[in-house]
Amino acid sequence: MPHTPDPQQGDRQEGEFADLFARKARTPLRGFLPGRRVWNAVGGSAAAVLVIAGSASVVSAIDWSAGDSDKVTTAADKEASQKKEHTDTAKNPSIAPSKKEKDEDSGEKSPGVVYVPVSGGAGAGAGAGAGASTPKSDPTDSAEGTSGSTGSNEDRSSSSTTSYLWSDGSVDTSEDNAYWDQSIVTVKSTKPLSSLKVVVKIVQTGGVSSTGTWSSLGDKVSVATGGSSSELDYVVTLKSGNTLDPGTYLFKFQYNHDQGSRGVGGDRYNVTAVATDSDDEFRSGGF
Image (cartoon, rainbow, N blue to C red; front, side, top):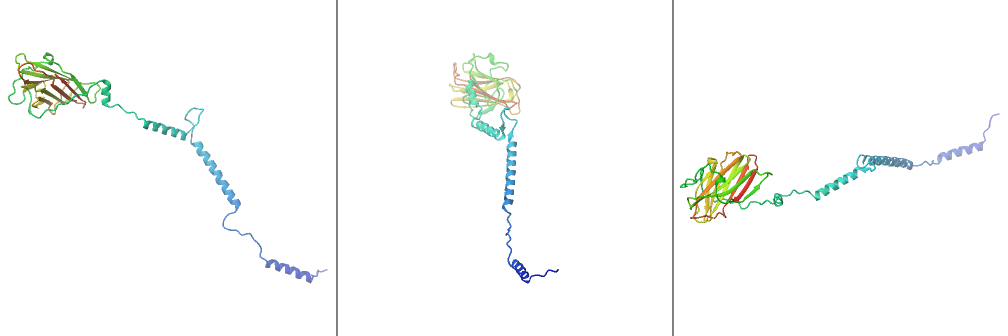
Protein backbone atom coordinates (compact mmCIF):
# COMPACT_ATOMS: atom_id res chain seq x y z
CA MET A 1 0.00 0.00 0.00
CA PRO A 2 1.64 3.27 -1.07
CA HIS A 3 2.83 5.82 1.54
CA THR A 4 0.90 8.99 1.63
CA PRO A 5 2.97 11.96 2.90
CA ASP A 6 1.68 13.97 5.71
CA PRO A 7 1.21 17.54 4.56
CA GLN A 8 2.07 18.96 7.94
CA GLN A 9 5.22 16.86 8.38
CA GLY A 10 6.47 17.80 4.91
CA ASP A 11 6.11 21.46 5.59
CA ARG A 12 8.08 21.13 8.83
CA GLN A 13 11.05 19.34 7.18
CA GLU A 14 11.32 21.88 4.40
CA GLY A 15 11.39 24.67 6.95
CA GLU A 16 14.20 23.13 8.97
CA PHE A 17 16.27 22.63 5.82
CA ALA A 18 15.85 26.23 4.85
CA ASP A 19 16.78 27.42 8.34
CA LEU A 20 19.99 25.35 8.24
CA PHE A 21 21.25 27.06 5.08
CA ALA A 22 20.10 30.40 6.28
CA ARG A 23 22.45 30.24 9.27
CA LYS A 24 26.22 30.78 8.70
CA ALA A 25 28.37 27.83 9.81
CA ARG A 26 31.09 28.67 12.33
CA THR A 27 34.54 27.62 11.09
CA PRO A 28 37.88 28.33 12.91
CA LEU A 29 39.90 31.30 11.56
CA ARG A 30 43.41 30.40 10.33
CA GLY A 31 46.17 32.99 9.77
CA PHE A 32 49.63 32.74 8.22
CA LEU A 33 51.47 31.77 11.50
CA PRO A 34 51.74 28.08 12.49
CA GLY A 35 50.07 26.76 15.57
CA ARG A 36 51.45 26.08 19.02
CA ARG A 37 52.27 22.46 18.32
CA VAL A 38 54.41 23.42 15.34
CA TRP A 39 56.37 25.96 17.42
CA ASN A 40 56.99 23.37 20.18
CA ALA A 41 58.35 20.86 17.67
CA VAL A 42 60.71 23.39 16.02
CA GLY A 43 62.06 24.69 19.37
CA GLY A 44 62.74 21.20 20.69
CA SER A 45 64.68 20.24 17.56
CA ALA A 46 66.84 23.39 17.75
CA ALA A 47 67.67 22.79 21.41
CA ALA A 48 68.73 19.20 20.68
CA VAL A 49 71.05 20.37 17.86
CA LEU A 50 72.73 22.98 20.13
CA VAL A 51 73.33 20.43 22.88
CA ILE A 52 74.94 17.95 20.48
CA ALA A 53 77.17 20.63 18.86
CA GLY A 54 78.35 21.97 22.25
CA SER A 55 79.28 18.50 23.47
CA ALA A 56 81.30 17.81 20.32
CA SER A 57 83.21 21.13 20.71
CA VAL A 58 84.15 20.42 24.35
CA VAL A 59 85.36 16.92 23.53
CA SER A 60 87.49 18.14 20.59
CA ALA A 61 89.13 20.83 22.78
CA ILE A 62 90.60 18.27 25.18
CA ASP A 63 94.31 17.57 24.75
CA TRP A 64 94.35 13.86 25.52
CA SER A 65 98.11 13.49 24.99
CA ALA A 66 99.38 16.27 27.29
CA GLY A 67 100.32 16.04 30.94
CA ASP A 68 100.29 13.07 33.27
CA SER A 69 98.31 9.95 32.35
CA ASP A 70 96.07 10.52 35.37
CA LYS A 71 95.34 14.11 34.41
CA VAL A 72 93.42 15.43 31.43
CA THR A 73 94.57 18.85 30.32
CA THR A 74 92.44 20.93 28.03
CA ALA A 75 93.91 22.86 25.14
CA ALA A 76 92.72 26.11 26.74
CA ASP A 77 94.67 25.36 29.94
CA LYS A 78 97.78 24.57 27.93
CA GLU A 79 97.48 27.83 25.97
CA ALA A 80 97.08 29.83 29.20
CA SER A 81 100.19 28.16 30.64
CA GLN A 82 102.21 29.06 27.52
CA LYS A 83 101.05 32.69 27.72
CA LYS A 84 102.15 32.87 31.37
CA GLU A 85 105.61 31.49 30.53
CA HIS A 86 105.95 34.04 27.70
CA THR A 87 104.96 36.88 30.07
CA ASP A 88 107.48 35.76 32.70
CA THR A 89 110.22 35.65 30.06
CA ALA A 90 109.32 39.14 28.84
CA LYS A 91 109.40 40.54 32.39
CA ASN A 92 112.80 38.99 33.16
CA PRO A 93 114.86 39.01 29.95
CA SER A 94 118.41 37.73 30.08
CA ILE A 95 120.86 40.62 29.62
CA ALA A 96 124.34 39.89 28.35
CA PRO A 97 127.05 41.69 30.33
CA SER A 98 128.59 44.64 28.56
CA LYS A 99 132.25 44.71 27.58
CA LYS A 100 132.93 47.23 30.35
CA GLU A 101 131.46 44.86 32.95
CA LYS A 102 133.52 41.97 31.57
CA ASP A 103 136.67 44.07 31.79
CA GLU A 104 135.88 45.04 35.39
CA ASP A 105 135.26 41.38 36.34
CA SER A 106 138.48 40.20 34.73
CA GLY A 107 140.52 43.01 36.29
CA GLU A 108 141.65 44.42 32.93
CA LYS A 109 142.16 48.15 32.54
CA SER A 110 140.94 50.19 29.64
CA PRO A 111 143.57 52.14 27.76
CA GLY A 112 144.39 55.66 28.78
CA VAL A 113 144.39 58.73 26.60
CA VAL A 114 145.12 58.11 22.92
CA TYR A 115 147.55 60.80 21.88
CA VAL A 116 146.80 62.29 18.48
CA PRO A 117 149.82 64.24 17.22
CA VAL A 118 149.77 67.65 15.64
CA SER A 119 150.15 67.46 11.88
CA GLY A 120 153.74 67.92 10.81
CA GLY A 121 156.27 66.99 8.18
CA ALA A 122 156.27 63.46 6.78
CA GLY A 123 159.12 61.13 5.99
CA ALA A 124 159.88 57.44 5.60
CA GLY A 125 162.75 55.06 5.88
CA ALA A 126 165.84 56.18 7.72
CA GLY A 127 164.94 59.83 8.35
CA ALA A 128 162.04 62.26 8.64
CA GLY A 129 162.30 65.84 7.40
CA ALA A 130 165.23 67.79 6.05
CA GLY A 131 168.37 67.97 8.14
CA ALA A 132 167.65 64.75 10.04
CA SER A 133 170.81 63.05 11.20
CA THR A 134 171.71 59.50 10.26
CA PRO A 135 170.32 57.05 12.80
CA LYS A 136 172.92 55.63 15.15
CA SER A 137 171.18 52.25 15.34
CA ASP A 138 171.94 49.32 13.10
CA PRO A 139 168.96 47.65 11.34
CA THR A 140 170.04 44.32 12.79
CA ASP A 141 169.69 45.58 16.38
CA SER A 142 166.93 44.05 18.52
CA ALA A 143 164.95 45.42 21.42
CA GLU A 144 166.61 42.93 23.77
CA GLY A 145 169.95 44.63 23.17
CA THR A 146 168.79 48.07 24.28
CA SER A 147 169.23 49.60 27.69
CA GLY A 148 166.77 51.71 29.64
CA SER A 149 163.39 51.31 31.34
CA THR A 150 160.52 49.21 30.01
CA GLY A 151 157.07 50.77 30.30
CA SER A 152 153.71 49.22 31.12
CA ASN A 153 151.76 47.43 28.41
CA GLU A 154 148.04 48.19 28.53
CA ASP A 155 145.77 46.57 25.98
CA ARG A 156 142.29 46.64 24.47
CA SER A 157 140.89 43.96 22.14
CA SER A 158 137.76 44.58 20.08
CA SER A 159 136.55 41.01 19.57
CA SER A 160 139.26 38.38 20.02
CA THR A 161 139.30 36.24 23.14
CA THR A 162 143.01 35.45 22.67
CA SER A 163 145.25 38.44 21.98
CA TYR A 164 147.40 38.29 18.88
CA LEU A 165 149.19 41.62 19.49
CA TRP A 166 152.04 42.38 21.93
CA SER A 167 154.09 45.57 22.42
CA ASP A 168 156.92 46.95 24.55
CA GLY A 169 158.58 50.34 25.05
CA SER A 170 162.21 50.98 26.00
CA VAL A 171 164.91 53.69 25.78
CA ASP A 172 168.37 53.32 24.26
CA THR A 173 170.70 55.82 25.95
CA SER A 174 173.82 56.72 24.00
CA GLU A 175 177.06 56.28 25.89
CA ASP A 176 178.99 58.48 23.42
CA ASN A 177 176.55 61.40 23.19
CA ALA A 178 175.08 63.01 26.34
CA TYR A 179 172.70 65.06 24.15
CA TRP A 180 170.99 62.22 22.25
CA ASP A 181 168.65 59.28 22.94
CA GLN A 182 166.21 57.06 21.06
CA SER A 183 162.92 55.53 22.25
CA ILE A 184 162.09 52.06 20.88
CA VAL A 185 158.68 50.44 20.37
CA THR A 186 158.63 46.70 19.65
CA VAL A 187 155.46 45.16 18.21
CA LYS A 188 154.78 41.44 17.80
CA SER A 189 151.79 39.91 15.98
CA THR A 190 150.72 36.29 15.53
CA LYS A 191 148.31 37.24 12.74
CA PRO A 192 148.85 38.90 9.34
CA LEU A 193 148.10 42.62 9.59
CA SER A 194 146.30 44.81 7.06
CA SER A 195 146.67 47.99 9.16
CA LEU A 196 149.20 49.21 11.75
CA LYS A 197 149.74 52.58 13.41
CA VAL A 198 152.30 53.51 16.08
CA VAL A 199 151.98 56.86 17.88
CA VAL A 200 154.74 58.13 20.20
CA LYS A 201 154.75 61.20 22.49
CA ILE A 202 158.08 62.48 23.84
CA VAL A 203 157.62 65.05 26.61
CA GLN A 204 159.57 68.30 26.25
CA THR A 205 162.08 68.17 29.10
CA GLY A 206 164.42 70.76 27.55
CA GLY A 207 166.06 70.87 24.14
CA VAL A 208 163.99 67.94 22.80
CA SER A 209 163.96 67.91 18.96
CA SER A 210 163.61 65.13 16.39
CA THR A 211 166.73 63.75 14.66
CA GLY A 212 165.01 60.99 12.68
CA THR A 213 163.27 57.64 12.82
CA TRP A 214 163.99 54.08 11.78
CA SER A 215 161.68 51.11 11.16
CA SER A 216 162.27 47.47 10.31
CA LEU A 217 159.40 47.82 7.80
CA GLY A 218 161.36 50.23 5.61
CA ASP A 219 159.31 52.00 2.94
CA LYS A 220 156.13 50.08 3.80
CA VAL A 221 155.38 52.77 6.38
CA SER A 222 155.04 56.55 6.33
CA VAL A 223 156.26 58.77 9.18
CA ALA A 224 154.81 62.10 10.34
CA THR A 225 156.49 64.31 12.93
CA GLY A 226 154.83 67.14 14.82
CA GLY A 227 154.28 68.48 18.28
CA SER A 228 154.02 71.58 20.40
CA SER A 229 155.99 73.50 23.00
CA SER A 230 155.29 70.73 25.53
CA GLU A 231 155.88 67.56 23.49
CA LEU A 232 157.32 65.94 20.36
CA ASP A 233 155.04 63.56 18.44
CA TYR A 234 155.67 60.78 15.92
CA VAL A 235 153.11 58.82 13.88
CA VAL A 236 154.14 55.73 11.90
CA THR A 237 151.45 54.30 9.60
CA LEU A 238 151.46 51.22 7.38
CA LYS A 239 150.93 52.39 3.82
CA SER A 240 147.68 51.39 2.12
CA GLY A 241 147.86 48.17 0.11
CA ASN A 242 150.56 46.57 2.28
CA THR A 243 150.05 43.46 4.37
CA LEU A 244 152.42 42.38 7.15
CA ASP A 245 153.14 38.74 7.86
CA PRO A 246 153.07 37.53 11.46
CA GLY A 247 156.31 38.53 13.17
CA THR A 248 158.17 41.23 15.14
CA TYR A 249 158.32 44.86 13.99
CA LEU A 250 160.76 47.40 15.39
CA PHE A 251 160.37 51.20 15.50
CA LYS A 252 163.05 53.66 16.74
CA PHE A 253 162.39 57.35 17.43
CA GLN A 254 165.51 59.51 17.78
CA TYR A 255 165.86 62.98 19.32
CA ASN A 256 168.26 65.47 20.86
CA HIS A 257 167.84 66.85 24.39
CA ASP A 258 169.69 68.90 26.99
CA GLN A 259 172.94 67.46 28.25
CA GLY A 260 172.71 64.67 30.78
CA SER A 261 170.27 61.93 31.68
CA ARG A 262 166.74 62.66 30.55
CA GLY A 263 163.61 61.54 32.46
CA VAL A 264 161.13 59.50 30.40
CA GLY A 265 158.31 59.21 32.94
CA GLY A 266 155.89 61.23 30.79
CA ASP A 267 156.68 59.56 27.45
CA ARG A 268 153.95 57.33 26.03
CA TYR A 269 153.14 55.20 22.97
CA ASN A 270 150.04 53.70 21.34
CA VAL A 271 149.79 50.77 18.89
CA THR A 272 146.65 50.09 16.85
CA ALA A 273 146.51 47.03 14.55
CA VAL A 274 143.89 45.40 12.34
CA ALA A 275 144.36 41.77 11.27
CA THR A 276 143.40 40.55 7.80
CA ASP A 277 140.34 38.88 9.37
CA SER A 278 139.18 42.36 10.55
CA ASP A 279 140.01 41.64 14.19
CA ASP A 280 141.47 44.87 15.64
CA GLU A 281 143.48 45.35 18.83
CA PHE A 282 145.05 48.25 20.74
CA ARG A 283 148.12 48.47 22.97
CA SER A 284 149.60 51.38 24.93
CA GLY A 285 152.40 51.88 27.40
CA GLY A 286 155.40 53.89 28.52
CA PHE A 287 159.18 53.66 28.17
